[in-house]
Length: 335
Image 1 (cartoon, one colour):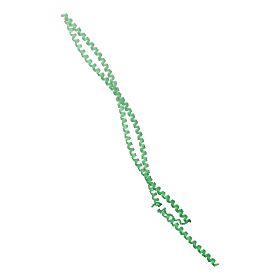
Image 2: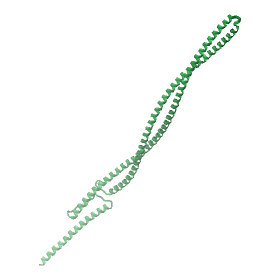
Image 3: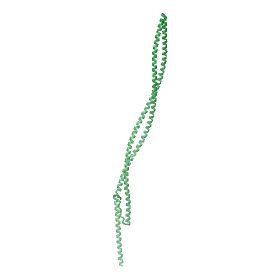
Image 4: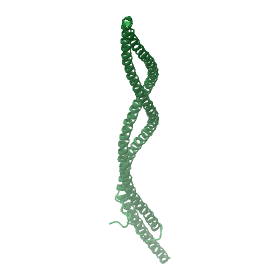
């Protein structure tokens, strides 16, 4: 009986000792795993995490399972961090490229705005020049209209003067005919006076008084003939000058006709030029308005580019912070 009790207590003692030793080893293993896990988590939480490190899996119990799944979590986290690193790098480079493009766009917009302002100023000067040209053309048209009116009046005066000269020429010819008649009468009177003088000479003493009268008549006829010759010469000279004046007036009238025709052609040409200039002024006005709209769009683009540059600056700062944060973790493939 005592030997059975002693054997029972021996077995019980051995069992307690084994249980205690197993519990101690289990607790030690669990404590070691917890310390590894805690150290690794502390390292990660402190920003110096080495994601290449893993917990040792020495058993298939709950501690080993926890280590296995913790390693799987760290591995997934490493993949995520590596992806975040790559993404942050690509994002930073992309922001740099976009920022460079934005700066180029802003500079190009400023250059375009300057060019558009120069073009707008040139178009305004051109529009002012066309307006001045239109004003001068209108004044030229008015002057041409007045000149044509004056030339028409001059043409009418020349026509009246030509008719008066022609009437004077006809009257002079009639006077010449009358003078010729008077000259013929004087010639006949002279002949009659000569005949009377001859008859008075034949009559002797009885014809002396008649001879004196005949001589006086003959002298008067000669003076009349001389006067008619002078008058005829004057009339012929006057008629010749009238004919020359008539010819000159005809040439002058023809010149006036030609000048009026040319002035009318010039007037029509000025009307066409003025109409074309007016259309060009309208076109320039439309182009100027379009340039103003383009300038507004360019200014808006420049403002948008500046806003984009500011936004990209903020994004660059955020990307830098992100890159710095993910670079604090060490992943596989890094030295």
